[in-house]
Image (cartoon, rainbow, N blue to C red; front, side, top):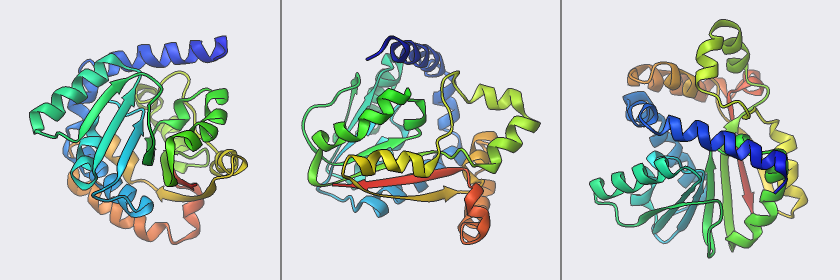
Length: 249
């Protein structure tokens, strides 16, 4: 890993250690955010074909809020994250909830092979060199018929442009110094060059930003998610907030 990449990862770790020392736990437990995470889990299962026998690896799992919702639907979930604070919280929550098929490990590398690898709001935190090398690493992690699923902010997203104009302070609160938005097709090209069959699609227009801004407003999130399902059938999908990438062996 290059020195600039190490510096980026060090800053990311410092930011997330602070984030996972109180704010994230309370924020991610709010009703709208929980509803968003539940929708993500349904989408992961739908797009990957995951089920009761699937072994799943989650890159950048954070405190495991998505992974613990996913665990009852699959055979095993392994969460991987650099942050010791995040891993401690994820393990505590798994024990508290009695979830025995989810384990959480501190670090950047996992052993073994998986039916599915997921990365929820993770790729856009990686330095360019690390992102470019990930598709090759996935070929060593995935089973022969394995699937990779990621969800990340799109560089074209209208919500980001509006947010930076109207609420720049709030936007900075939810972003690390080094993260950025990704261009969907350019990102997909990295995976295609590695020989993975890859497709991209828009996940939402405004529902996830709404959940972030108003985490207690479950009804508002659900209404916006329903509206998103209609909006994504129109030309406005080109400026949607987040994009999914699905890459198959």
